[in-house]
Every structure is written in structure tokens, then in C-alpha cells.
Image (cartoon, rainbow, N blue to C red; front, side, top):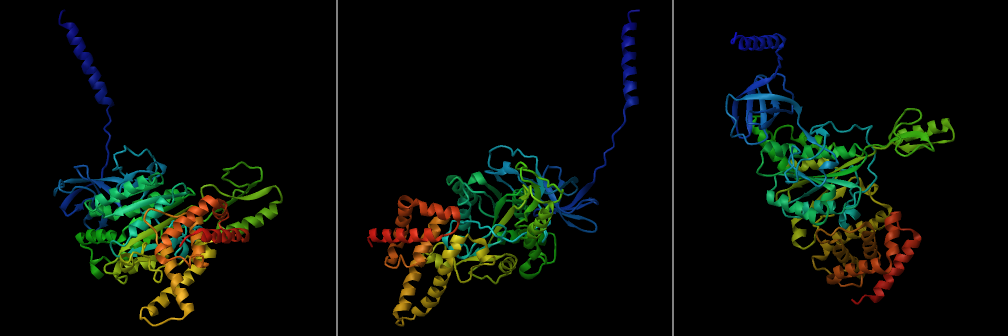
Length: 554
């Protein structure tokens, strides 16, 4: 009798086990796996991944990710995005089902991330649930509209003579150490307190250099509206190849929510080198300068994603609250042509209705790619490719830089194909005269070098040209507000500086702008508000300049 209770308990346990075994239904999970057949130099050849997609992430046993880059008949070429030394022949490779994507949204502002959007600044995780694939088709023709709003760089020479518009692609090109990155950083600093978000993509640069850029942006309070994407020289070529597309995807999120963004690719020469490296390792046929055949498409598909998206218009009752996203007729009218159609529809509906811009539309993404030349050779393969894709270029010259003209912009070769459409009316009013004066000065200066005597009128133009050259010089990290740019260029082109010794032009400019800020702030405020020089403002500006010249001791 004493042995019965344990036997009963045993039977109960066995009955419970049998019941659970009977109820168990094995869950079969199919996984697409492959095997590493070859590995080395950041590239792995994998067989067996029959359903893998282009640009899909795959995972190695060590946890390192790779990207399916070359889909061939019997194997897949994978570029490894991390340390490939732990990967061995025969290792199992798994599909993740995810195309390469990056986190996007306002949570990235002020952060430094790698090419996959992972934070590398030690400030903790990025709290966002939005992701975008790094590769994406550019907006179509119908979805775009003309570039008509300026990006104020704060650099006098650019804003006056080579204006950049929101949605434009403007190349910055020049030899090493000519101030290409400095122009980009100044442009970012000048957006502080404005409505333009910035993404700075560092490709193949030294880590110390990237740290210096971030420190500069923090010092001037510009990191609040900036995201830095860094794929440094010590990182795999795969990450350097992806970095600009990742930066572009981050910028597209701002553009497609109706905001304006600026993305700087520093620089696309190193990007092309990284792409050449992975292509040659995957045994793709080399072409000119050993670049693969699709090197043009590499940059064109990136830069075409920069755009000025068209506004969508809706018809709503006049008393409708702000933020309404649907019109009374349920239609959205896209772009300038759509606006005309909306006007016709408004006439049919009668009074009590109005046309409004639909919230979240009309954003822009401006691209400033940087390309490094060797010994000023702009006819090399990558520079000519990128020049043909972009809407103009800012050409920096070593000789000008060494002569102390900084920014060292060669105005003759530099051009903006958007031109005056991307300038405020105030800048257009003063810049026309500046461009003509500088062009005639450079032409005359070439003749004057021969030492031949020149007449008085020619000498006056040469003297004014020298003073305008001094006006266009600018210290680094000191962007100038629009109204002050207009005032000093107006003074230079209208002869108010002709009596000032060339060596003291910088001193004259600083004191003039201080005088205008303290004695006549209403003139600058009016130019900043109206974005044009009215007759009354011009009259007041002339009087102020004459008053300052009477006080100025040359």
C-alpha cells in the first residue's frame, strides 16, 4: 500500500506527457540558405541562395552582414559590410529578406551614423520606426517643378554669380586642398535657424578629418539641423559604396514630407574608387581607367534623386481649418499646370472656396557633390561624367588659392545652369553689374600683365575689379547674411569703394557693415523682408553709403 501513491504520481506524469506529445505540432520553417565557396578582400562567393534579390542583406554565422551585389548563374557575389576575416569556406549564409535600408526621420538630426544608419557618436540608439531603402527610382518629370527658391550659402561669390537653387545639383570641383569642403561646411553653418536640413556624407575620408568637421559644426551650432553619414577610409569598400545612397535616402524623407534638404557628397571620386574596387574583385569587365561599364549610371541614378517636387493643390472652403489634406472634389492638382486646372474648377464652384497648397508637398532635395581633380584636369573620366550630370559647377583653382583669393573660385569656368531663377530679386539687382565688372576686369587684367600703358577709363575698370576681388574674399566659417551681401556688393559695383586702398578693403567692408547694423538697421531689415531693393530703400542706402564715406578715414 505504501508504494501506490508514487506509482499514481508517475502514471499522472506519463499521462500528461502523452497528452502533450499528442498535441504537439512541429512548426516547419523554410529558410533559404547558401554556402560560402570563396572569400577574400571583402568579397564572398555564395552558392545556393537561389531566391535572393539584388541589394538584399544576407547574414554570415559571425553576425556580419553582406549585400547581394552580383547575381550570377550558379553563385551570388556578396560584398561584406564588416570584418570578413572570420568568414570561412563552407560557412552557412542566410537570407534576411530585407533590402539594404536606413533609418530616417527627425530623430537622426544632430547624429553621426555609418552607411547603414547605425549610430557611431556614442549618444545611444536612434529612436525611429521609419526606414527607407537606400536605392530608389528618382522622381518622374510630372512630379517635379522648376527650381525657383535659392539656397543661401552665405558665400558672396556664389550667391551673387553662381547661385544655387533648392532642388539643383551643383558640383564643387577642384584639386586637393583648395577649399571644397570649406564651401560645403560654410553652407551648412549658414542654414542655422532656417528651414533647410543638411546631410553631410563623408566617403573615404580620414576619421580625424570627419571628427574635425563634426567638431566645427558643433562649435557653430549647426549640428542641430544636420546629419553626418560617415564611411571612412578604414571601413570596407562596400560601406563607402553605399554611403551616398544612404545619405540621399535620409534627405528624401525630408523632401517627401514637404520640407527642404541639402545633401553634400564628399567626395564622389573616392566613391567611384570604392565601386571600382568591389567591381574588379567580383571580376566585372574593366573599362576606361579600369572603371566598370556602368560607372556613369552609378552617379546619375544618385544625383537624379535630387529634385524640387511640385506642389499639390486642393480646393477647400474659405473657412476650412489649416492642415486640411483633402479637397471638396476629392482631387489633388499637381504642379503649375494643375494649378491652372484648379483655377478653372474654382470658377465653376463659385464663391466661398479657395485654392490651397496641400500640406506635405513641394519639398526639395539639393545635391552638392564634390569631385577631386588631379593637377586641375577636369577632362578626366569621373569629373566629365559628373559635370555632364549636374546643373553647373563651382571650379576652385590652386593658383587662386595660393594667391590668397579664398574661396578660390574661378568665375570664368564656374557656372550655374539655373542662373537667376535661383536668386532673390535683391541679389539679382546687384549681381548683374558685378558679373559684368568681373568679366571685363579679368579680360583687361590679362592685357595689363604685358606692361603696356592703358587709358584712364581702362585703369578705372582695373582698379574697381581689384576692389571687387577683395570684396568677394571671405574668411572661413563666416557666412554673410543676404542683406549684408547685397549692401557690400552694391557699394562695390556703384563706385562707393573706388577711393579705398586695395589693401584696406577688408577693413572698409567690416566697418561699413558694422555701421549699417548700428546706424541704419532698417535698410538691412527691409532688404531681408522684401527680398528686393525698392526705390525708397535704394535712396536710403545711397545716403547711408555717402554718410559712411564722409566718416571713413582712408
